[in-house]
Image (spheres, one colour):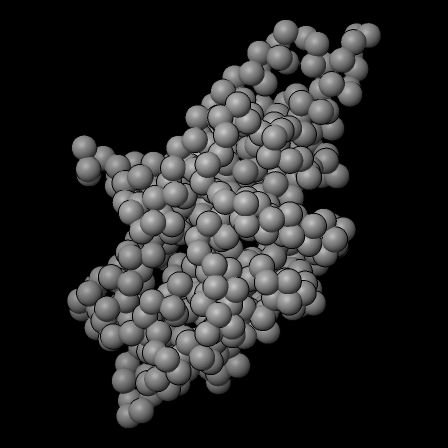
Length: 390
């Protein structure tokens, strides 16, 4: 959304201690790359409904894809702190595309933790270089948050699995070269009958449907996918047959933290931009910022964002150490995304009529943010998770 420095964040009075100097040096690299290779083209990508493949390759060459993938598999060899830097900078730049967060920080960890050596060697170097774009196939037309209700099936026939079914709302689904696909191998077992597969999207029987039209995230391609008698070799199975549910649950902590990290960064950027806008915009002979209502509204947002920043930073620190729990991740996701909606709504209001114009970053941020209360588990599911621990 803007290139404001960390010092401009509302929590600047409380020093951030989660990142070391090398992370901040990397942040400068990411920020410069986004300013040079992403932001100038983003409006065009929004019109087209997808980004260019060239930017994926450029990001791979710059070392900002799959940042926590080890060097032996073609990655930079960082940790989640490097992941968090990229997520924050994507949020601050106001980019709804490309889908690097899902590709790098959701799909790649599944392969790292559960893939065979052959699967890691085949896919991870290509993903880190931007040559292979990854997506994940979970949601179905009649099965959203309730993954146990999925209808896509995979039955073993000789050396293959034959897969039939459909998925929807698949980020990177149009551009994708690799799909991490969830399917029922033992349908009667519900959750305990789910398996995961690594599917080359050129496989016969794999069909990409529409690039779905969304109210936000317009530069991110989001597809319907269909599978008809699709034969996936047995070595495409990720991990153990019928173990997919456990794998999915194990990755949800990081998936939800990813959403929170990006949401807080968006809040900080929106506030910084709105402060600058209200100081420059004049009404009734003085700056909009000089009205008490404006200052009080901004002060309220600043205080709420500061609290969210401190909690989220603690979650980043815990997760980097392997100690973040499911409840804390759910709290981070719930609070950050609901705060994001309030912040962006208030900031848009302070922009007046301009806030409703797509050419203004606040309008795009407002539209892009709404989905974050839905994906990675709806916020209603987050409340259920938190409630179970009370």
